[in-house]
Length: 218
Image 1 (cartoon, rainbow, N blue to C red):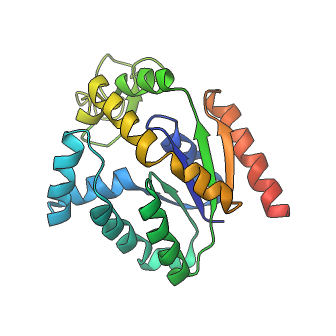
Image 2 (image 1 turned 90 degrees about the horizontal axis):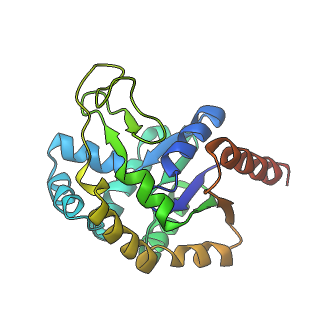
């Protein structure tokens, strides 16, 4: 059971992916994590990636494809199924991924988390992260116990540059232009399930679990 999870930035892809990973034992492949790992390691592609992310612009397909393909070709993917979070985001990336999946012989299912834009803006603009341990908080929905301090290591929380409201709006416009066509792309392949992501997290997860159960039985 290999999955792709689609949705606007802030639709809950990371949250739902974490639940699915724990329940089904999948490897969580987040482009955000892949990007940040390369940025932290100071790779050539990581330096280029950071410049795009800081400007609130999606990383170009060529860079993203190379980073994701390299991850999919690692040895752990041969023996364990995965969930892709944040990739593909364009039709060209989807075509590239199709070929990569054929190479590694991994079929997929696709989950689309549908959500309204204002909810996304509220969620992301309130998000804070601990640079020490990587834990993510939301000032409105899951705040830290002490204001602006990480519960784990008491480090000061920061707001990522790509979580500022003006940057979020830019990301949403680009998403609608470049990524939304993937919904039709995967619908036409009979691989897509649309999930109402405006609901509470546990209700979203219950819908996903039911779909996966039905698909497994089928």
